[in-house]
Image 1 (cartoon, rainbow, N blue to C red):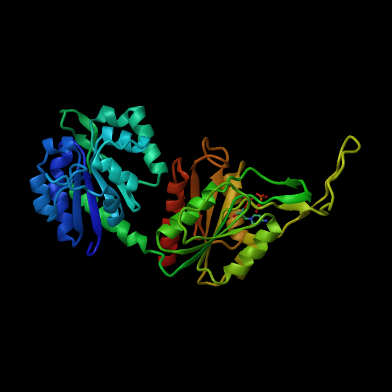
Image 2: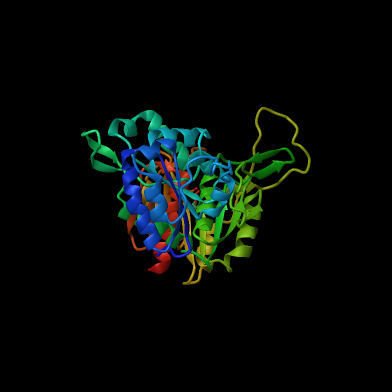
Length: 400
Ligand code: CTP
């Protein structure tokens, strides 16, 4: 299941560290190569000798390897791994990761890692629910780290509640699923539109909207993370692509977005249109700056082309088309209407009524409505988590 995969387990000082012996054994049995990095307090709970024997590799504990003062290269460790798993991750280690502290080898490896990081917390229930811990967890999620939620049950303190580290078998399943998902859209081409469009009035003014592009960029990253080759057509935004396999095409107006999208659509298996495209554009664009005159100014607008609707008409049975519906009233009815009228396979309903959702926020709350009527509602989440939900739905629809 994990043949050829390179895993670093970062062990910090929690009683749950004893479970890492079993986890290491499971990873090795599944074919992975495992290296262990421990914090000094982790030694109190499990011996380096146990983990070195089970992982078949020396355990790294400090920046210095041996009595000769040979150095442990944390940058090399960070580059070597396919996944860096912090298990158990204590409240202290999580706090340090969130704030970028680097006072041990574990944290230096974290800051150097180029691979996915998975955080598997273990702590007492009050420490887990403390706002400081929750804030740190949100920070790690915003960095793109994956969280393996602690489970509920009896804790080492004798209390009962959430904070138990996930069981080794469960962690193994999640890691295997992560590697399987990574290639889920290999050889598939995905088109994503993002951001606003600016419709010029004259050389210095435009009609635009507040779309930040965050949702579309998160989608592009999430599709690239599962192996898709992504074309991202974006209106003006400050967002940057992190995965340099993503082909970014910058456009300004609805017409430019239309032309770029139509050019790429036929070669794509999936298109997700998250851009906030202007519905109207000035009928005439003044070549020179419009001078101030009179008490009012009438701006005549003409309809733009509905890109999504045109793609819906062109779509072949092999292509999957996903649209967004940004609504303030009669959300579900309007979204369903758009789904039918634009011939979509799925529509992402974005209600502007939800607190923390929509333009400019780092979070979003969506509902996915499928062509066959199935509906999935999600809670308020960081936009990159929402993007993953949409990608998972696309994978499900492609396999259906
Ligand atoms: N869309 C598009 N081209 C347009 C307008 C919208 O491709 N000219 C796409 C958006 O990218 C989105 C979907 O259509 O995926 C719905 O956009 P939305 O603004 O919610 O709806 P409209 O169809 O524009 O209708 P209305 O503004 O009346 O709600």
